[in-house]
Image 1 (cartoon, one colour):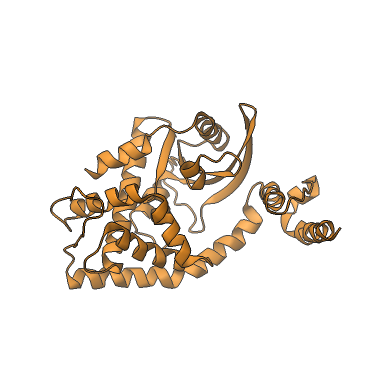
Image 2 (cartoon, one colour; image 1 turned 135 degrees about the horizontal axis):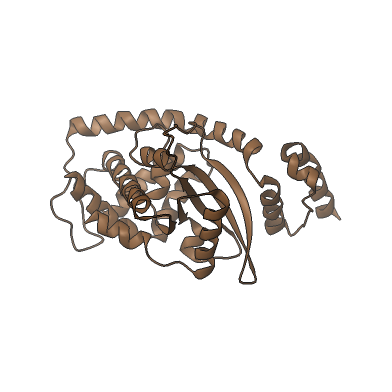
Length: 299
């Protein structure tokens, strides 16, 4: 069953330093649940930036802004190491809604149909809501994959068809290569989740035992046209929404200066100090930082 596969994925243990980092994220962000995902989960790399989602159970019922999430950068000293974390914060209700595909933004379900872990939850009730949302992300992605993919093909063919479209709808330059990398890095995950989701949706009757089996979702032409119309709407709005979100992040990304300077040092080898003024005014400080980088690279 899909729910069993989701539970197995979410509760697979993570490295102790990332478990502790998740606890720190929960403490600093007041989160009721923390999801760990991205390249650090896949590779175990402690030198890069670990990606977390901090979910807050907003009991007031207020809707989050359509421009969510709020992003912040943190550095946690753990077991003699510096664990860097990029944290996206949003309400659990909005996360769950986005996972169903109800909103035009594709960010949540495209990210969380991919591997993730749940290293912290406040209680069982919150954990269950997160588990349902992750399953919904996989179901949403699987519906669009059936509509965007061929009539028959392997699971990897459908996921490639999906991710080439979803990454193409974002403000990215590596659309095609990114889709292939994502699928190639986690072949077992994608081969397992798609047929389970399609069985849940009634698109196939039996989950084949072979991961490379040919699949043929029973999606009518009417249903396919319905989901393709929904996709065209999301694709049309994808890049504008991402540009607006990137522009907003330039002014609201907490810890943006430290994050940017760490990225500069990692890629260029040039260390530039994070002064209080640069911390307070990251956008105004950017030209001076770039000029200092240019001078040091020339010397």
